[in-house]
Image (cartoon, rainbow, N blue to C red):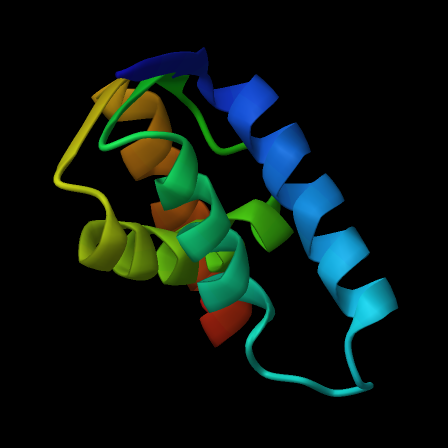
Length: 100
């Protein structure tokens, strides 16, 4: 079991994505699946504490990496502050759609 703070996890994800992109052929669409697979080799149970997205790029990365993590990891747990995340994502969605 691996228990890690969400921000620490995302720092590692960003570092792994950078390493993958630096060592693979340009434009490879396999960066996020590769990072999710390497993360799954480290553990079968992943617990992310204080899931809090504060960066729009992380929203996109989280959307895709969580899909792949569920493929590779047996149990995935996260704690978060629901109101904050809902408000942030709702605001970002409206901003991108031109509503506000």
